[in-house]
Length: 370
Image 1 (cartoon, rainbow, N blue to C red):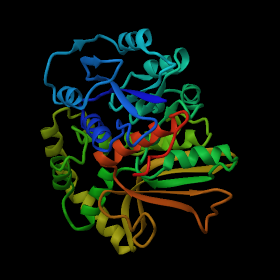
Image 2 (image 1 turned 135 degrees about the vertical axis):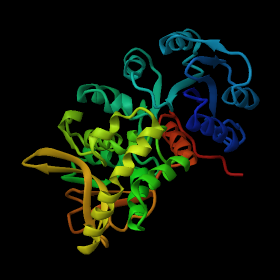
Image 3 (image 1 turned 30 degrees about the vertical axis):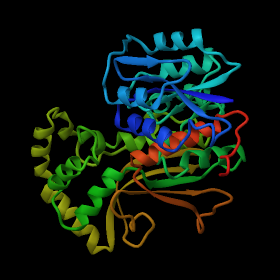
């Protein structure tokens, strides 16, 4: 069966990479696939292009490059109505792909799961991290309709691993790791004796940070990733359950101007240099660590800057690399599950969105051998 795809956020970095990758890798090629992927819809934050019979490569590239005139929309629900009115379920199945970083899309996700036969693949963690646990379970209970592997360490299979642990009745007793390539980079550069403010400015110029670096340094992105993994493991957790200590003091987050923020954190250069030296004197390094520890059957979740031994699994991380470790019955404390992956770039994220799409493909056949 044909798999139709409607990409929300198609003009963004991930979305445009995904569009190009789908065509470059031959996902639409009937000579390679019995079950082709066909892009039928593309949406930016203001306009959309929908063609039930499929969008050609040239048409898709024109949209992502913002060339041409397209239909404006006020709500994603109006797009959903248009698709429902024209989609032929006997001819193809349809999956919406959310590659935005938008907040407030939880109702859209819920509408799709509740009122349609369509599926969702999301790289946007907000709909499943900013909602309550009940909503998370409603959205994700059917892995054949809701894929979210790209919400945490896209290239590391983390989400799928913890979902599987839950389903084989071996919930992790410990989840621990470094989930931010940005903060990992900052910690690695601090070890080299560089000043915090200079590192953050450099990370922003390299494109490692969010548009405003405070959105990395406040630790909330890491907390949301930990929450998703705990929930995927079957623990009914909420954001309020996580003890989050930001990378830098809260007082600095009041600066809305990026330049003022970068200027203000120069005040922290000396204190962070001291922290690095103090850790070094004990054979340790600084890492921003997320941890879920199950105590008496209840999960305790913490996120914050920690000292760890330099030769430890987290201490040996370098640059933007991320790592997740887990302890459960099958993987005891002396031999924990561990996976390390680079901070997911655009190509890795796009590929893993395509992999999530594969798991929603009914009657999937393997690539035709040439």
